[in-house]
Amino acid sequence: MITISEYFQGAVKSLGYQSPEGKSTIGVIDIGDYEFGTTMHETMLIIEGELEVLLPGKENWEIFKKGEVFEINAFESFKVRTAVQTSYLCKYR
Image 1 (cartoon, rainbow, N blue to C red):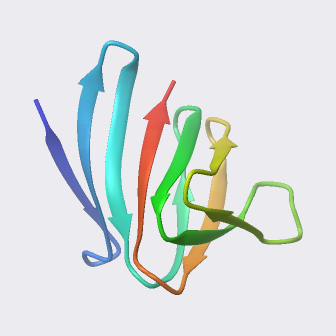
Image 2 (cartoon, rainbow, N blue to C red; image 1 turned 135 degrees about the horizontal axis):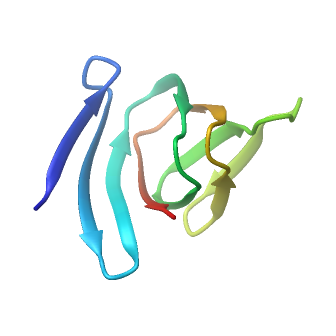
C-alpha cells in the first residue's frame, strides 16, 4: 500500500512504500525552513534541487545537491532549508 503524508501545511509531501529492503518515502520539499524529528535511522538522497541541512550536533549548515546523501540516526532532529523545490528519497532502516 502507498501512504500519503503532508507536513508544514502542505509544504512537504511524500509517498511512502514498502520495498524488500524496508520502508521508504519519496517526496518534495517546498521553498522554506523546516525541522524534522526521526524515530528510525534515515538515509536521505537528494533527487533534484538542493538542501541546506543542519545535522544533529553540528554548528554549520551543509549543502547537499542532486545525487548526494546524508544520514540521521533514530530519535534525533535536524533542520533543512531550501531556496528551490527539492525532491528526495528517504530510506528508513
